[in-house]
Length: 593
Image (cartoon, rainbow, N blue to C red):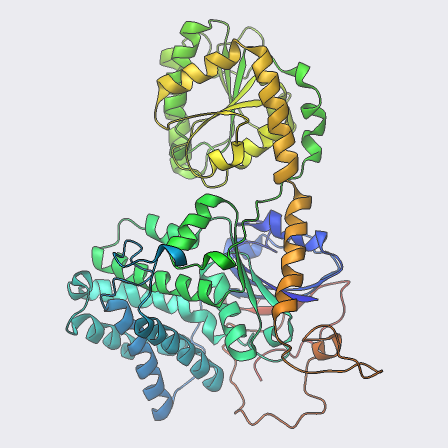
């Protein structure tokens, strides 16, 4: 089977989101072939290079989201009229009050049987018609980059905001707000200009697998629109939720219009997807509330490599019976301040208790927060706090992986009698799963997917409640038998539900189910006259049309930021096709035709 893996800011780049699970997925499904279509988020990410790719990756095609040059496409009068019509329709929908849309999950007429929303069919059809109309225009004319940042686009947005019966926030949009929204739509719709949507591109895959929602899923929508390629969407963090929670400095008009756009794009993605695979029930609730059909949703937990934790998990006697361990990225969302307040109460009840905080800061905000926590700990526990953890040092230590005795995450949990999670915001708690694989009892705050992950194998307390956190930790420190029972149960649960093997097996089954339920897009026979098993057999993977008549479509002019060579272009703006060394050769003639 040939899979088009769609990523944004992650695989195959060394840095970014979701890179590790994508790499494990590709390597674990070696009997399939993968074509990777990747969006990069920054020049630094591109300069960082790729992870080593396995032989089943046939080719990689990349495009930047962080910059784009003028594509050199000059529209004629008819094309300009088409653009104005479709773009005007799209922004008009964003400005129109529609209480049943995905951008308003609190709709009073929501139907709980369909996941919590009931979209007005006319408005949904207007949005999708405009979106695919722009995609068809880009395919016919060679790109949209210049048109999306033209005065025509801004004027269309202004007319939409000034029309009758629009959202109050849209009506109040100022010129600066219109320019900000137009710039964001230019970035979000730029993938429509790519030359990926050809018979020898995404038209040649058996299915598209988007590693996230939002921009990464957009090529999958177009592959389905142009070639009926089925789409699988995986979201370990709901991208729509991210848009709601970020950019609080934007004006109400900008936030309202962008929320409407991303809400409708998410609703269309969920509608078109054959299956949607959230990583936990917390993400699943978001998806259903934003329009996902429950019949299409399959929860697939992220897979962790259990091997590094096997020795620690099988050696509970290595734990120090008086030590609490916290691990993770140091940032305000982890609420280490509440943990330090709780530990003051723990020390009052158990004077021999120790707390090891293991992790590094994230960015300047994280560094400032770490320094604040050090100062707070020094005030609470002045006897040597902040020094590396050694016998005889203070009761609280701040350490990092790679320090003395901490070669890897498993070593962080080895000495823990209890592992603590104190977050106020959490998606899927990876560190908690690692502690469970290490066979350690846990105390966690009830945020994100924590309860789903822990099950009945750990103690869960309300967030921002130092007293409850302290009482739970003290109860486990005083009861070694209970700690041992919970640790063993946690390890068994993690090995059953959260391993790489179960993750790969789940996606393998979904791939087969999707292809089995998808009508063949072309009927092809083998040498004995029997149908070939997949809609796009290996013969279809050869670029070019060797027997079909020449396409009647006008030749396309490729955007200058979409090139074929993996070499660095003179300009920082680029999108490329990269044959992977060691894989089946792919001619470098896959640029715009």
